[in-house]
Length: 369
Image 1: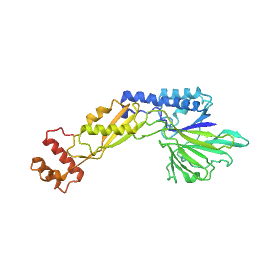
Image 2: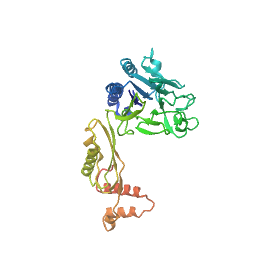
Image 3: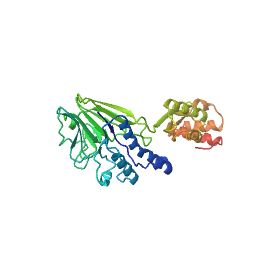
Image 4: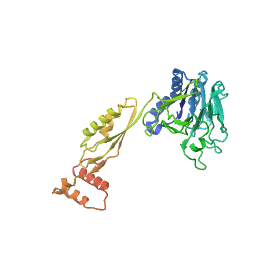
């Protein structure tokens, strides 16, 4: 039997600050459609159900469209069981909005609840979870009782750490879960795929978010396909890439570039190497130390690329370097200006280079950035 473990869909996220009002509406609709798409993945893989490990929604206030889409999708697929524990972002608004809970939607309370997913010859596959509240930390084990002969899956939303600080209900203390007969700890909250050991028996796994919503979540995202052998109750957990927009953050060293065409060539090569597609969100960060006389027009660079991707951003982290020898014998006003600043020991290297560049641009009549 198979299950999908996913988390942090963050349906109904606004994203207006990143995309602007119109494109944000389109992107919000795309993110909402991910719930239907993960169901399609489950059906294509022959899954019995989906583990939703928190932050299905982005906020405690859910739009009618998001609520209706999710409820209808659950009710329309009675062949799939949905096991849903809420995360720190969303609260209980969705559950409270249901006039009656669909038979295939399985919920949890602040007390440990255990569902039997499969049973054969007295051995079971179980799923246990609890909601986070002020009185129960994210992984407090009190009340959790799991049999050694079963395959035990636990689902939680929080941050794993060796120990939890007093009053921090978002931390899952690994030391408190050791020796509890946990085989697979299905986690949400961290937005990247991550895996590690609980003890000699069990492991924890973050599926990561299904799809990135910003440049702080670059790289590949997806879900976990959990395949359970019904004969010996062993399991395999495999990360599967989710087909959506990919976010790329590409750092390009332009230290050797002398002008804008040079920068364009370096950016082009880096984007080709990164394999960025037209449906992706791309942020290029220019780095390195350019010569103080280098010509650089960021508007040209940005305009050259902004129409080639769904979203393109350009950030400039470059600094400047000064070739002291080039001005040592220069009798012009430029040479005198550079030497004066080079001798000023009160200036940092970066500040000195900035002042020299600004002065040289002014002396040659160029526009100052």
